[in-house]
Length: 175
Image 1 (cartoon, rainbow, N blue to C red):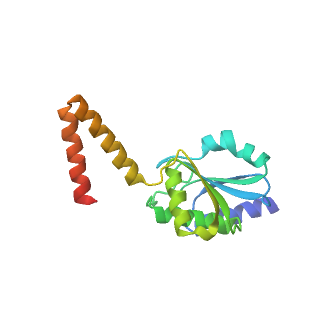
Image 2: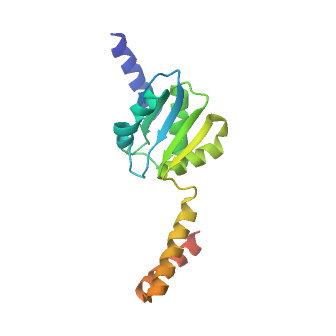
């Protein structure tokens, strides 16, 4: 009966706060917390959960894996998919699990979320771990665009160079 009541209260609090986050924990809550932030957009934490979460818990960490709002198992048709919304979800996790500080483990796009969160809320982050992650999405896109431009120039690919020029013009217009 207690378990049913606890589950009801947890589910109600998630919906009452406008949150419908899928969250799964591994290990002892007294251990050092790690929050895994998955790739995406449109990703989820399933692969991490199936391969790594329990291993880290067995090594003495309290692992929290979740799917960002509107992604994976965290359905929300009203999700805006903004960094601020992602920060709200992380702050919800900190509050829900009574965390003062945690290690953030960001994979790919989750690394951008983790890096920006660390910059905004350094008091909540004990360490930042990036796995296949970008520091800056724009710098990465610029690097890719410049690399493709060099290849197209060396190959004399005029059609590709026209496309690259259009992309650069759009970037100049919209930042």
